[in-house]
Length: 146
Image (tube, rainbow, N blue to C red; front, side, top):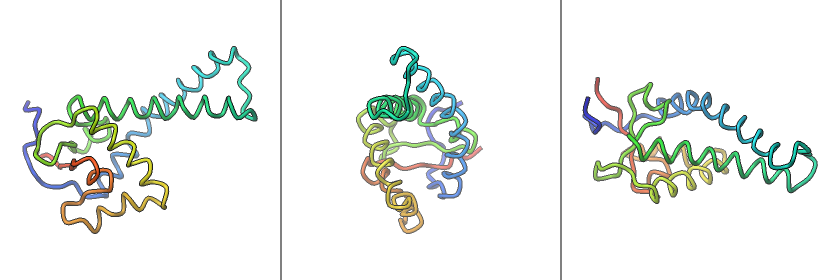
């Protein structure tokens, strides 16, 4: 099977959002691992009321989440959810996404969530169906043919 996109059809936002829901399953597992790591680091005395412990858990959750997306996007261009819906993220020129670009994409996607997801809804206005993180990182999500 070819590892490069066969089609150049920009993926609609609805499929991207459905793929994101699929991605919650592996992410829930990773977030559980983050909590276990925080418990180990704190010597079993993880107190959710202490700021340092909250920041530890949140930092581990963000780090493992970033690792999931960055590794998925740079190794094949697909997360588990994207694979199910035949979506692939590539650079604007069709080449694979590299690590710096994937990290930028992840960071801007986090920021895009803050204003009620405006960065994602932007895909409804963009002629190439790109979200803010796609525009910032010079990437696009394509729907591959069967």
